[in-house]
Image 1 (spheres, rainbow, N blue to C red):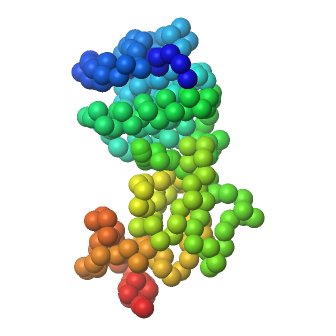
Image 2 (cartoon, rainbow, N blue to C red):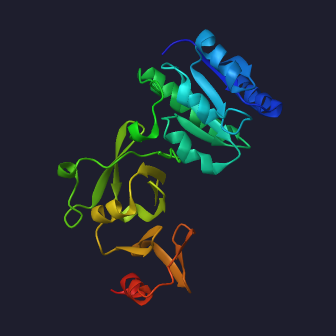
Image 3 (cartoon, rainbow, N blue to C red):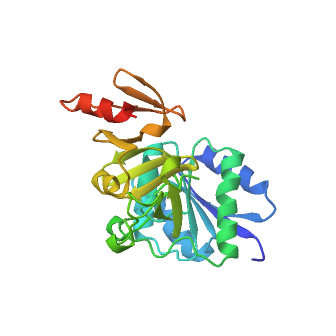
Length: 270
């Protein structure tokens, strides 16, 4: 790739524009291409400017950043979503955004996000096609699918490894296939139609059900402790009451139910 990477900022707050312009100016291979303060302005400017990167705020009045993604056609633009609300990450990844930055934005995370775009452009891999609806997407999050890496839907049944014999599973994220070793997974959290996989390299988000994940994971060591959690018992540091502390310091719950004693037995048996 040659030349500079152009950046368009779409945000309704002036301080956000100033921060991003400051960060863009720190890198010689980035160039500021303009600012929009609402979705209507962005719809007019994107076809004119044809930016390589769109820094897009989620929570804006009248029309949100997600509304913009549902209607804009920017096949050559890489979208980096910016917001103060982490809960929007999964929604953003359903539109195949390249990265997600949580405000306040630090230079280290900014650099990681734009470097990802630079690599994609160097490899001639466009970040987004014409945005599609959630049901058409297969990918979650660069955990936020990093970077909050983002995943995709399940591979076809005939391609799935047999948990009883394999030591890993393949997960699609950012148009790539990641090999995730079972031993590296701390726990899995269910979020409506998505699951978040917490593992040694970060967090991965995929469009899948908890029931589907259970069919792909070996038991033991994976135990369903709650309707929203699947735990790798080999990664537990401590159990206190109905709370499990993992080796990464995060905590998950054990459901208060008639099966609670059985869950404890599965977590602690040799």
